[in-house]
Image (cartoon, rainbow over all chains, first blue to last red; front, top):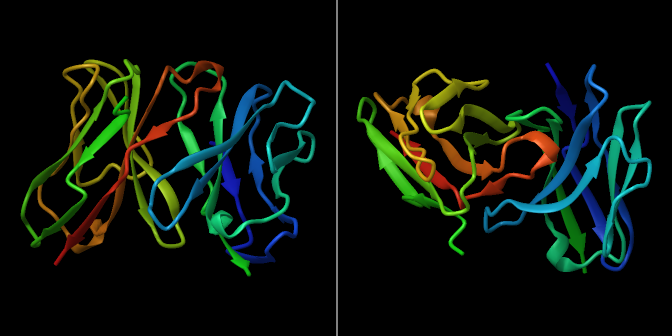
Length: 115
Length: 114
């Protein structure tokens, strides 16, 4: 079974600075997808970014980018120019490429942004 | 688009009571699932469905039942509530898991069992 590990329960960043959230995963599959979800205090789950394992190029979405290291099974999220609205819990998640596969989440990391 | 709609948003139950958490989606998604979120545990899969008439167990299925009579609806039933079921529950849906379809989430239900 696949597992997703987020070893840092909390992180803090100064507004306008850059922060990197770590995630590792364990799988024997070669084709899969990785996600970062954001959960602000409103409780809503928001997709931040998605990475296909077969793509070597790291995904980017505006201020959010990932560092995907397939051999190391590492998938970190970098937030540039941090804003107060980035304060939230962030979850890393894994999904196999097969049809009807389940989504497995890490335990999450709470990010605070200092003004 | 309404997306994924969960009701109720909040619920308080007494131990032993039963209730159904409702989930409906209007995106014609084949895949639907229920997660519970507990502090320090992330989101854990309770049950999921890959289409009408098909359901399967996730990581923490005990104490919960589901059914999928239509593509749109996927209710979660607590037959006899226990304090250990105090949690935040999320319903989520997607196209079939192939091609890495992201999950679309409802806004969650906070359930307290006393």
